[in-house]
Image (cartoon, rainbow, N blue to C red; front, side):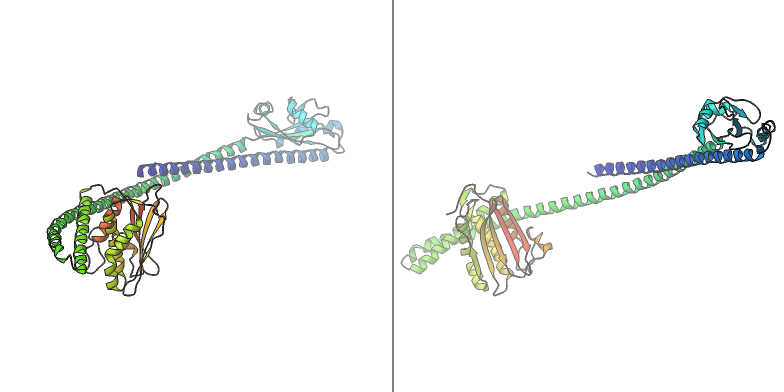
Length: 450
């Protein structure tokens, strides 16, 4: 799981770096292209302005001159040219050719067609720029017509190469590439540092997970050890109790014929025999739990289990001055299990609730059908239990009672009994005080307790 998260994080980081580099590169390319277009537009505007200025100057200089003298004036414009970067041409009125200011005739159909259409500027290809005596780079030609004088109708064409702008554009592109590479280097450095920190975090998480796993395993081992101790203790207690219990039962059986004529005495001795028999059954059931035996599969009435548990704890509630309310509706589903063990589990829950209440407190035992289970609820308004203790009270030997008042086995035994019946036991604190103990036992499908 940790390795999978590490791969996901690494993939996300690499994608983030790639996207960031792409954004920086795209932004740099867009800015470079925008600057290049702006520089070329500026060059074109310059040629148009220069052509219009030259046309106005020719109109002024030739105004009033004879046509023969006026025809020599354009040739003097050669001084304005810059070798390899700027050329000046005159387009004759018939539009048949370009006459350079240096006196050479150069045919350029592309420029002638643009002048005829009245375009103020035209862009030349590399080949066309070479034909006009410019470097084989893109070039722009500004066009303007002389409006008066002997040269009226002639078109002046100012051709300039974009070599300088292209060089600047190339340098701008190189700077953009350098910027992108620098940004990529910084992002990669950041990514390496982030990956290193991420690896450390993942290693720390793995160590923490292993530590938590070891703690959980140690806790399970401790619980298993306590459960084993509980089983050993149960077997030892059963062995030690069996002998005196057998003596009590034997003496009661001997005494029973002698008090046959005494109704009260006979009932008392019979009660002793019944309770010793009950204790014997509970001990056998607990021994079965300790050995991992399956519990009995009798169909039990929830009301029968509740009344049996009530009979066993009534004297303790009366002595403590704590009323016990029983709520068992009719027509409840039956459950499958051992009646004596279920009674023992409820007895432990009821006695804990009674011990938690002061004199005058109240305890309520209710039963209801809940989903596909029968729910036994033992609710008291006693001192209550904290949420922290609620998670531990079901462990063997854990108790919140004072030393000598509790063994920490009652709830643990009740929990084992409920588990053996495929049920669940949970304890939760109630507001503002008290505790709620909930036992859910699977109900027999289709059964109704009449």
